[in-house]
Length: 629
Image (cartoon, rainbow, N blue to C red; front, side, top):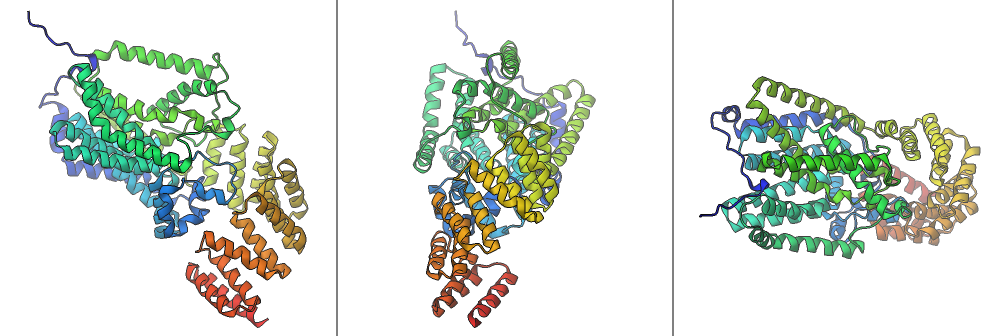
């Protein structure tokens, strides 16, 4: 008796859609050109209001306060430095995870030379990158689903998905769209390799994967997805599938090992544990992963009223509801998938894989502060899978209830578009961003603190004072006292400035910013010896601090210690040759030391690097007045 080969549930092929179904009829009317125009237009439309956005959150550090992106020469250092290495020069104690993303670093340098501090230019690039990724989703879905209409629906939902606001409306969120621009073509070329058998497509896929990985490390999940695709969703003997997959994945493994080797060489490690989580046992951190995963699934399904902070924290134990209910939900979902596994099409399994596998890396919660164990930008790739599943659901319903399917699709598109437009407004200003965060985390000192900083930057000092004092009541910290002092200084309440700075230093004598600010206060009073002591204390903490070094130079000028002042500016210019202010003050110092030729040369170079014509005129006038004394 002839034996028939059995198929695993996931190998079972779905019944082909008849050529006269509704999707095929619509697909004939919807050409690629029309589909792409509608998808791109909708994507650009819902994100257009993000063009009014300011620099917020990490933008203020990575773009506004990052002197390293001012020099083209730092492109050469992108592959040998971490994303946040520039903060080592500012003694920022709250360092984020040590990301190694060379192409993002290069983008910051190029973007600064293109747009400077014009936020709209940066936002244009973000929208363009997301629109490009959306087009790529269309072509990927078209290959996976073999249906133009379903591909258009998948890409449309992806393009207007509200969870992407963090990656698109936030300038510093661009690593995800950047990575997707190469991750998705890598999958497309891989599918062409597996269907057409041409090796050139495999090598194109590997090359795109390499670029994606150096944009953002999340792309390392791509070989895992390919393994799932080949081993679980293809016919044939299991051992043969595993062997063939292992051979195919070898070039991807070489790229992955190369990236990890470069990462270790630069960062000294592959991963880390966030300093704020050092005292929390690893098992509690891992027990929080189900909560994060379920929250991500919920935000994919209902992406409404999203925030940068959700009031999260690590679970406390086995009885914690934030552990119990997510685990119950995930077990129930796994049981459901197992029961109906024979009814799930290959395309649906691909969608599920595209949701789960890209989320696996971000469930390593040790690298995050507990307030940030859910961050919606990590849904950028998983949303491809969720949108693909929605498109498949539309096809299923369209074949049974055409009017209902069409009405539901319209409702979903309208609600998603509205939600995304509203979410973009949250990212338009620091104040809006942190007001939204306070609705989720009213008892977090950091939300009130950041809202206070936002009010400070917009010169709303009474509001800033109010929020900073709320933060102090929740958790007295040196950084809050320091910025409260700066608020009082702006309000002219000088009697409270020194008191709050001294409170900050009493709590943390190594707090550089407080030393620098106290030195600045004393300098303004004419107490140059007192200010000198504070600047020296700051430089002992961090000799590379540009702010403390520059202020110490000014202080030395005021004391008439010109050789010492010149040495401070020369030190700064070795680290950042394009610092026009340091070079201008070096010119003034040289002039006072009677080094006229060097002074003129320094002035000319300073004016060359200074982009503001009004400031250039001021430099020239001040230099001439100084020489007449």
